[in-house]
Amino acid sequence: MNVKGIKWINLILILAVLGGYHRYAGVHQEKMTEASKASKSNESGWKDGSYEGSGNGFGGQIRVRVTVADGEITDVKILSAKKETKEYLNMAKKLLTDIREAQSPEVDVVSGATYSSNGIKEAVRKALEEANE
Image (cartoon, rainbow, N blue to C red; front, side, top):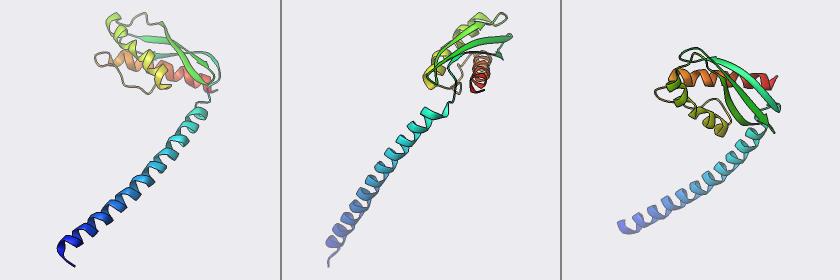
């Protein structure tokens, strides 16, 4: 057999292996996605209601109210942040939407308002701990 024939056979074998792996990976990924969705729908365990929590921001305590309906975060509001610097707090308010969309306080902090962001996240975490009890 000549070199050209061997190259073609190798190419066909490589393509067959890649095609098989691609199919296996696609099926595996689909199963993992379905399992993840099922897990997420049952994992929160949050009871419906409104819960309050507080955390330390840049200038002081930040109090929030987290509303849970059907086991999901439906609303996050800042109740008070008396000593918090307005500029930092206004920047950090973006987290309220991020937390609601992520269904978790584990979101990225706002650059330039790190302490205020961490205070909001801490307050939401504490409120959700209350929702788990």
